[in-house]
Length: 484
Image (cartoon, rainbow, N blue to C red; front, top):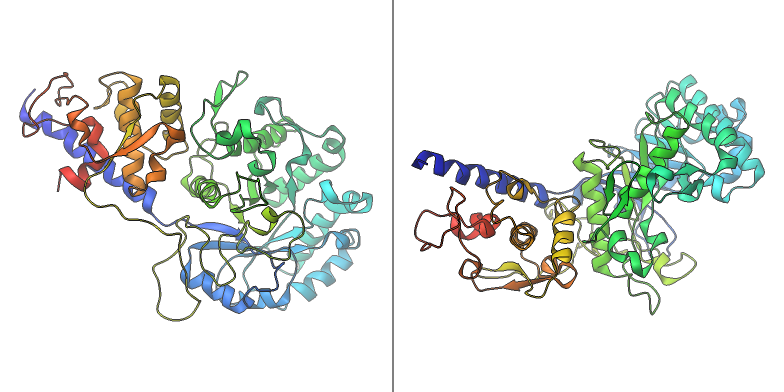
């Protein structure tokens, strides 16, 4: 193999590594739910300006028709979704009443405030009484027609659903809507969505289905996955599973083409004593992965290539929410605008205004550090690390596939070493990004002294480092330490 052939993988892999780093470290755009159940929350005008100037949050959803919040978003160009109270649904099934409502609640603010969705109630099929449920679709149609008659055609109508509408979700191929709701409520609702070109909105919360056995599955952490024999798809996180269960249920009614939007999802950063799964790191990791999925276009196993408009719950910790402590700790921010944790939605600090933002502390590392598999890690655990990192972890794993530059040696340990270190380096050398459920360890000892080097011809040899060799294990640290 001549010299020019040898150099090509260097350039290709360097470019791939650069693109990976840019992808993972880029700021993220995501929607957010702005709840107001707190007695210490900042004024809406400050909130709107904070979102616009200090974050990359690109849309906001509120749970009522608060005129102060609606006015606060005037002129920001941030899409705002508002919610009609469940109790008004029976009245608004009448077109005349719907036109009056639009004239009083939308007309005075639009288009200065950029309304995106009008949500007709919230989780009505789950929580509503018979009058609300029976009038839900007629009210959605009436509000839509009222908007059209007012020439507010850019504003869409939908309603968010809890996943209590599903009869089952595991595996997704067996999913279906609750039988009693299919014919009389969900079929006409999906017909409306298709006609109006509005999304079917659901609230998939892996948190509320959490159990200790499924901890890693719920939190996008390495796990063997759940295999669906009917589709041949393997699910390594609950979030994808829930979205595909919704899609399958829609498809069984003939509406697989209707778009899906995520109205709420999140994870609390604290809870009552004993709720050990409610931590800052779990909340950060869950919402970071949700945000990545929202904008990546990766989609799900049954909906590849799809993007989902997504609203994380929630903007602030809300100290007046009833129930257990976890209910008051879903926020991305505290009321003083300091970040509970960072999921990549902060812009660079701007002088003046908006309060002080204090992202979660990061301890920088110095010198050369690598993430290596622990000596006692089982092959099953290391393979789970590979499966997770190559799907939900955002790592480009083409190099360890057959024909790839780091395919040899074709062992689970060698492939896991490459993938685990690639993830650790791209994430910024934080120890918790090398944990991998206890199977990884950070080392300052050059792993090239432990793992064999390989020439670009992929023939296993041991050579002095100054020779023209490429250490597959060190691919994703090459930019930091080897090629500059």
